[in-house]
Length: 320
Image (cartoon, rainbow, N blue to C red; front, side, top):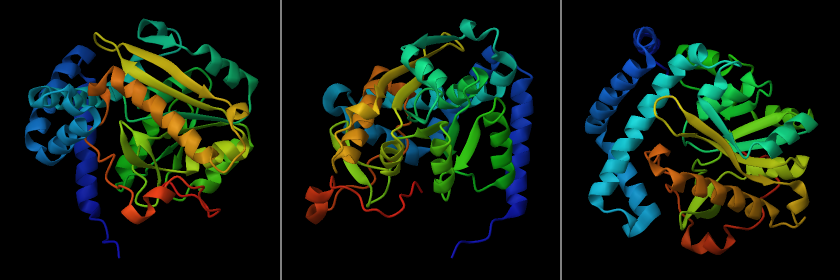
């Protein structure tokens, strides 16, 4: 049974966050970056558990490519990047608009994506916990193509509402990761854009595909939705290129319905293809990936490893 939340503690956390936001917004973005770097250095020191997870994940992903010192430096870079990303979220509504976006954003490989958005019809857009995915969702809304993004609802209701106000400022709509499957179906049936962060561990019953040379439990629902609605799958990214607030927003792969084979293996093949594309994106700038989460938390059981790639059951897929 889930323990009831401490609402007083939730309110204190919310008020603390609002105070930090107010202070950060009084600074220039350059001053905010200095604050973020200081916070990153502090969190790196005190957050031993996630620091060790990050170092171990880099060892798993890259083997001997990096020595211990280089892995440690990369993890420091991860903390710095994500602290800067959070700070940027506070400045984006004031800094980025439809008239000046070219000063901060470079588009790469976007032509096929724009063509599909203009054509209409269901579209699945994927990225990972890489670069600044929050800015990407904001930007697509700014361009007039607001996505419907699947995201976990925060346990702190007031904090969740505050974050939602940023995410939905340019028309993006959030769908709860847990319990939102019917809403996801409606989005695709109506020919709209559905977006996911597609690099999260799906538990022991997930679909295992190769990610950096190791089986990674991955949600089946994304491929099932795309297959059912014959929706093209776009794999993209928003990569920091600096200095300061400068990003490259690009598309690495577009997987068309015509490429599917119409076999029971399509779910595995589609899931592997977009996972491989995400891996290629991450390899470009590994310090911009969230290595601090346990992507390989679950592994195939020995007796069921051969069956890990079989077609999923017809039960309603879950993303939670």
